[in-house]
Length: 202
Length: 304
Image (cartoon, rainbow over all chains, first blue to last red; front, side):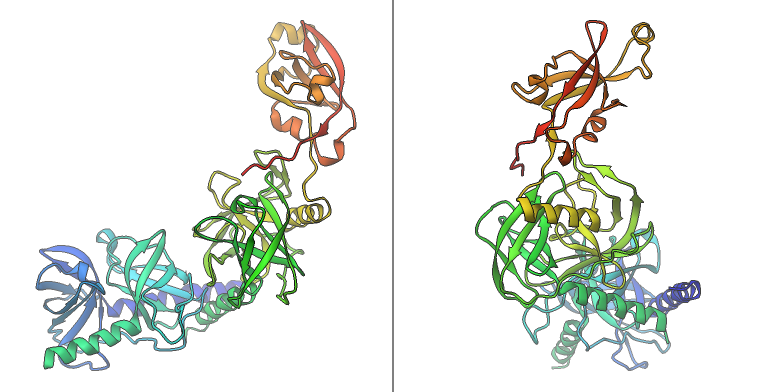
């Protein structure tokens, strides 16, 4: 790789991280930062804002979400699934917000680059780069329970995005296990959000 | 838009995919399988410490099928083992022989702890000259890695960003620090294991401890160095015992080279030294004495 390519690569990583910051929020409950969250608007910039995070990040029914530009809003819990470790929060953004774009296909390949964003130890918008550790699915056509990535996460990354090299969301960072990052597949989250909204309406 | 980042991502995944076609899972211990590399047609290289049995070894191939393998030989001192695999048309690893890995080079460790391929990435953190393992084997170059070790790391290949193999990974040669056994060493050991089933190494049957010879004695005996090796154990009936070495002798030189620690002795005990006398100089009873020591062949140990 030539020097200019390496320089280009560094710039592109920085640009990709900047873009991902737009969809990453900080979640606070009882005034303490508890983790990260992902703006999830399903392509509708108007209307109430939806944030997806881990259930273990939101203890009660209320939380504060802080957007990348520093504006904070009160949010209320609209869905929680302890088994999947997912929670959905609703808030009034007061402006148009850009939501995450989910990668539905193609399936993830081992060795592919991934970027994780979070707010570890009071840092806001920290980023880390890694690769996919293991192929997604053991059985064909089934969404796996976890995406496993060789990327170093710290507490505070929980609920934040794991994205591919094009900036599309592939997972919700949830925990570390044996040195590996485990993320809930974005397509599974998408299905869960759809089901949760149907339940809320009916 | 972000073309370099995307093409790097694709190239890494391509490298993993192509190199992964020659990586197998080895079932030769309880619980988690280890990895192996299809090195040459019908020959799989693995790590010795992950093979806990000599019989009933099976492999999981990249296509998910299972195949039996037989143990051709193992060498605890380099932590390598060689398996034979019959009747399979598996691609062999593409080896990077021409350019040694550099410090800071982006590398990927592959494993197959089951049907699925796994990868972790990092950089080469040290690339140095020859070194000797604690069991005395010479490894052609030192390759230490800055990357995370996961299940299946040992026996898997270290590959470059183009998918070419740089060596075999093990966590058992440097107290859990990930190291890679370079291609040159692997090829040497594979050739000898296929020919003989074990690695021939010379030995003397001595245990030594570095000591400092008192200055007055060193001056009196006109020694070049005051560091020497005290013989603290002697295998009864072993080569050095037969040749008349005694407990308490202080070894100064072997084959014309001063010996300051045990690795200096090991350096004189390659497989080609079996049966060839080595001139020894030592201190016994306050006097310098010369002795011929003829190394024997080290009995093959089945060390775990």
